[in-house]
Image 1 (tube, rainbow, N blue to C red):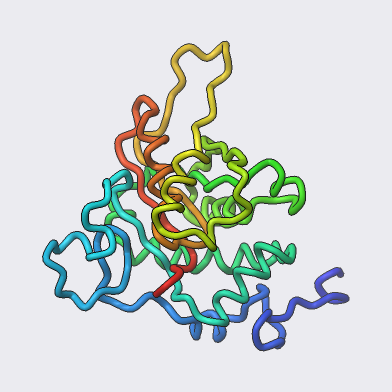
Image 2: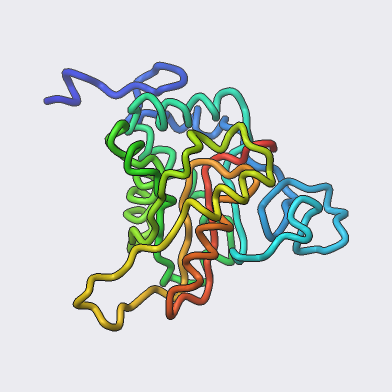
Length: 238
């Protein structure tokens, strides 16, 4: 009855759609073009010296095994991210998670195992209170349902006094991110907590990789964790 009274329409074209993004508009969203860096997922000319790493991530610690992103930074893609992130458009999380699922299917290193556990990149308690949700958590929740995988909140984000990383230099991003993230401490009654061997970090955007590296560094300290990968919806700067 509610669907009949308030039919769902596509966020882009405005036509009726089962989800809030119609199949045609989802197909038209600009994806990351091949070839890509096999470490950070950045589009490359295919001529880097190290076949596994592009110039941007050469010389930077490999705290995550590999990172992949679904979409390029275009005006339309960023508008969808901003709607989800800042304008309470939680209804976009489900169709956008379909794009992450498409990316997953195209990534052999992800499909090779079925024991991945999804860990959303957290936001500060203040942002969680003001927004009412974590956009990365919403994406991870829908992706977990699509892939039939577990999801775990293993990370905390503390307030470092910097409102947003978007205006920081790459070096400042790395320093701020390393101070911002830490793992959750298990309950006092749990003497030997069991952590998943393979973890996939889920986020809405990937810029310099500072957040993914900081989170992966913390997660790798947990006993039993062997591999940490990272996926994000949009790559900034591509």
